[in-house]
Image (tube, rainbow, N blue to C red; front, side, top):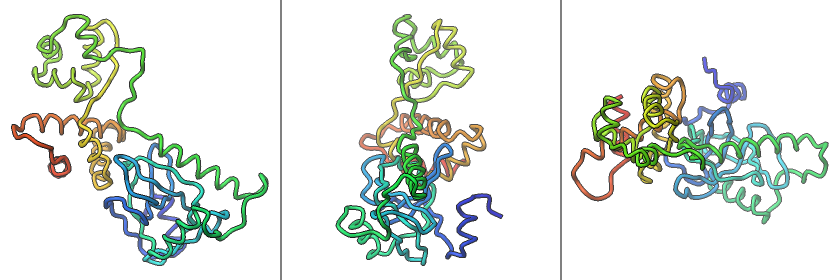
Length: 284
């Protein structure tokens, strides 16, 4: 029996079987997005740009405002899409596709969202309108999803491992000796191509006399590839098995493995990160 509240809701409504896959996000798809406890039903409203996907919030209930529309999907589902509650969210927050909107319905939705056509409800004219609570909740969910990130954000105060090592005149070989790792692995730490383990962080803090800032510099193509929804189930499993459920940590660890794997290859040109990630997750 499912423990997912949204899937339970779908079951209660006797809606058709949902797709539950993770394809490349394209306009017109209906997804469940989730990150850090923030969950929202979203319709992809435009073409993905890098790591972000433009979306509109949706709900299973029949409620909305003048920029909302009850849409038709290919499997008969009819969610209400709030065209005025829109944002660009991180692609990696997309958990699974539920269904696709039929072309006519999606075109109408875009017209309603742009104000070229009237939606299915009257405007919200009072703060006492119950729809205000729905709108506020959806806006907050999209805000959290748009701010989600699995790469660490560097503060301005602390120095990185590379900066501390340079200031202290400590070479990669010395770090390798202290941590019991290979010189190549030590260089990856200095370049920010992998995250130090908890024990390594304690040793480095003792070595430098201060706690280093974690600053990771992964290949941009690798980061975008890791954000693809198709890899989320495997990363989620790795998070559960090896990172106490921390998906961000699992993503950083996998990115470090991919950088190390790519460094062992002598061929030149752009990396096929998608293929390498598929191979790594398959081996796991």
